[in-house]
Image 1: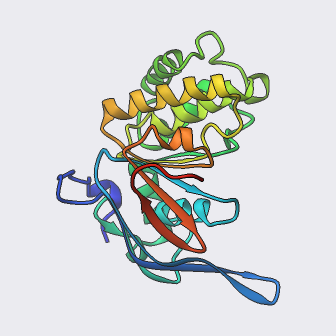
Image 2: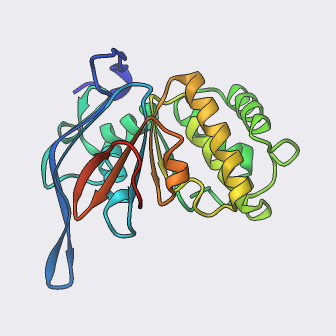
Length: 244
């Protein structure tokens, strides 16, 4: 089977970059099985920006993990960048994430022993970019995100807002066609969160990347093209004004 690297996704307006077809997923919980998704179907087009709202424990993060190939569905099909994830080996799933997906984690997940610029450059180096070029590109993006002068600090010496900016840079540095963001402003104060979100949307628009953003905030959700909600394992699309 060919590597995901050998099969670049060709974005066509009629071809979804993410497609879920009747996907169900559950996990064991003590002496019973806890369902998370029930026959979920969803299509996301290249360049689209979606928000997913839902209460804690509703399965939002699980959905991101399924799309990224970190978890596998119990049933149904998931197609990402033209490839069905269930047909890929673990190595091929890793390559699919590495080349096509940028993941922004709620709690940053930076490598503590690497500096800010090294955390970002690592993504490029894993994709075969030379060290000097990777560092130069990482420095430029970090400066744009407001980390100028702090590129060589370890994550422990950065504020929460600064760590999140580094995490965003790491997710965007390789110009992925898909960005999955799990509560990217959840640990930030309102002012910092608004600034981080603004830069995120700006960079995404330039790279024409699609975004699936998990959030508890209706204000954050209103910055995207479509709003989805998840409740009791069901994904629904929202139209017009609604309360959450």
